[in-house]
Length: 138
Image (cartoon, rainbow, N blue to C red):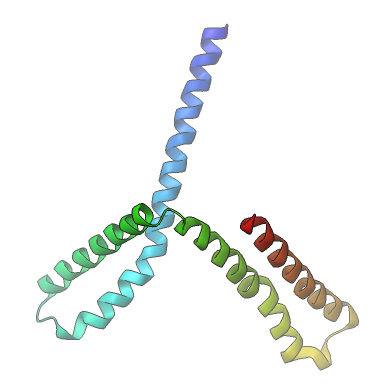
C-alpha cells in the first residue's frame, strides 16, 4: 500500500532530479560550444599541429567552465542580471524585431489582418518585456 507508493514516488523523484541535472548540463554545453568554437577559430592560425589544436580545444573549454563557475561563486546576483538581460533581449529578438522587420519589408503588400497581427506582436511583446522587467526588479 503506502510503502509501495512511497517507494514509487521516491524513484520518480530521483529520476526527475537526474533529468533536471542532465538538462542543466546539456544546456550549459550547448551554450558554451559556440563561444569555445569562436575562441578556437581565433587561435587556429598560430598553432603548428593538430595535437596543439586538440590541446587548445580542451584548455579553452576547461577555462570557460571554470570562469563560469567563478562568476557564479563571486557574483551571486549574476543570475538576476542574466534573467533581466535574457528577458529583454529575448522579447526584442524573438518577438518584436521579427514583426517589425516583416512590416518594414512587406508592409505595402500585407493584408490588414497580417499588419494587425504584426502590430499585436510588437505591442504584446513590448508589454510582456515591460511587465517582466518590473516583476524581475521587484
